[in-house]
Image 1 (tube, rainbow, N blue to C red):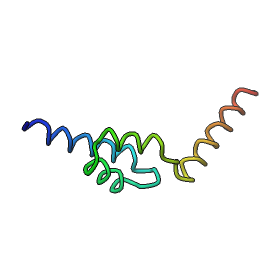
Image 2 (spheres, rainbow, N blue to C red):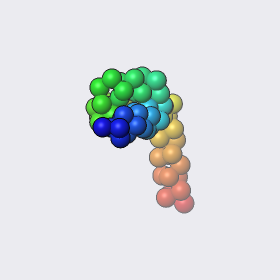
Image 3 (cartoon, rainbow, N blue to C red):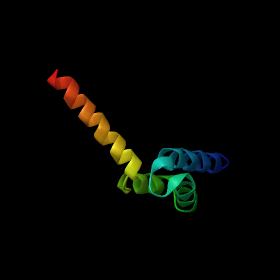
Length: 71
């Protein structure tokens, strides 16, 4: 029993860290993972839409890769 609480907290913190640039941010994913489970929080993270900044960053990276492939 004593290992469950620290594992739950560490899981919630890890999910929150992953979600810090997503729609709900660090605190949203942290509290969702803390109240539900870290596994549900991880599923929320996977299903979440990335922020516009993340999308723009991915587009720029893809464009740069295409330019490099052409030359």
